[in-house]
Amino acid sequence: MSALLPYVQLLGRGPGRSRNLDEAEARAAMDIILRGDADPEALGALLMLMRFRGESAAEVAGFTRGFRDLLADWRDIGAGLDWPSYAAGRSRGAAWFLLAAKLIAQAGAPVLLHGWNSHQSEKASVTAGVARLGIACVTGPGDAAQALRKTGIAYAPLDTMCPRALDLLKLRDVLGLRSCVNTCMRMLNPAGADATVQGVFHPPYRELQADAGALLGQPQMTVLKGAGGEFERMPTKPVALFGLRDGAGWDDSVPALLDEARRLSADDFGPDALPALWSGALHDPFAEAVVLGTAAVALMTLGRAPDHDSAMDLARALWTDRPREVAAA
Image (tube, rainbow, N blue to C red):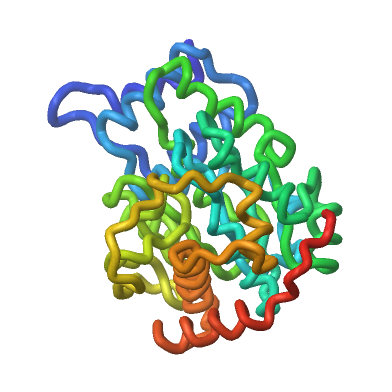
């Protein structure tokens, strides 16, 4: 009998008898999966039943705790801000949010970016953008801690940080649908940073991730519907914010920054545009608004500014004072 069978049965019994897993059950199920004791058929059934029912905050929290157990060596490496990047299928232009992350590091809050991005076009490639900007791509907690001390920012690709999690993410190609694992990667916060910023593609996940964050004891958290599912603010319309402040549920909204109809999907900029904008060789008010607006919300999450206007003022000052050269990683 498959070790996962009791959990599949809880999710899949008939009307009136099935239910979501509680947090302890979800963690126990993930422990079975990560030990390699789950039959592939049972694993697929579990993930797709959760998808069909709609995963709960308790299930996300329980799964996430299981993944975190694999990453104990990453805790306390000195990250001030957790920045996950797991958007799949991102096809539009350059990853401007990477420049916002550099601004946050410049403000003195070490940023750990981590992620894996499937089915991306070359112009939207996060890993290419990381390389062009000289952000250290780290392979372990020691490398990450060193990079955070030296430059204040690092990128940890999931394939080296937690290969087993990547295996589970790649089941999307087999099952044909995303699973709860995608959400758990956004919740992962491997370094245990007090603050995290997260993007979603589907708006209902904003509240789900905030609720899961509360169960996980996350102090500061902001979730928004971002470009391609990344934590990246669209500057041409108001943006709703959800998350946590001092561990309590919180929501807010920020206004549009520009009065124009331009869309990110209309851009042809690729990874080379990132260092160009940072150095000043490229001048593009729309791209700058994406960077500054995204940085402002991150600064609010960190408690560096009491309100949006103050956060925008700080982001503009950081942008003006940025060191324009791009150092090699």
